[in-house]
Length: 165
Picture 1 (cartoon, rainbow, N blue to C red):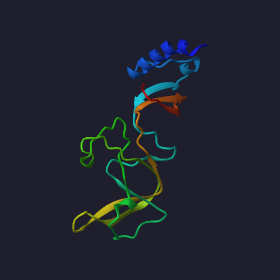
Picture 2: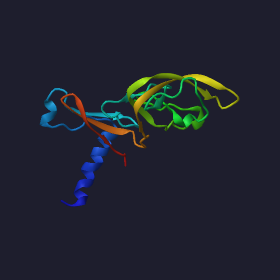
Picture 3: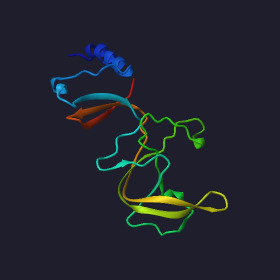
Picture 4: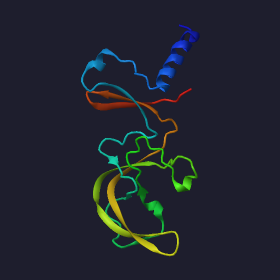
């Protein structure tokens, strides 16, 4: 087969994907909970055993807890949740009209909570509740939101990200 013979079918595939038309199926897709679902999401799914950190929640990675009542001027020791991020195109004040491309945070194995004082950027420290986890995973923003989730027997088997031409 020559490359030229593929141009038409590939263009047709891109057109179908861009308009969210049904994805081609196979015999196996007839099994309950098996198939492909096209979604729009700039992030990958949290790894198995972790869950997204809630929107605006703060977390610190253990082991152990930070000192109760301690003061932290460096906020980089903590991460801020953005929720599950599905369809999230929220604008932050700091981004000046551009999408907020901060990492999606996934957490597991919560140790507990602690109140620490975080510098407010001006002249004082603010008591802040922080959840402490043994596991924190940062998922980076992906430029392409075009995703096909492949399910087998009701469980996400694979996530395929593609760029539109």
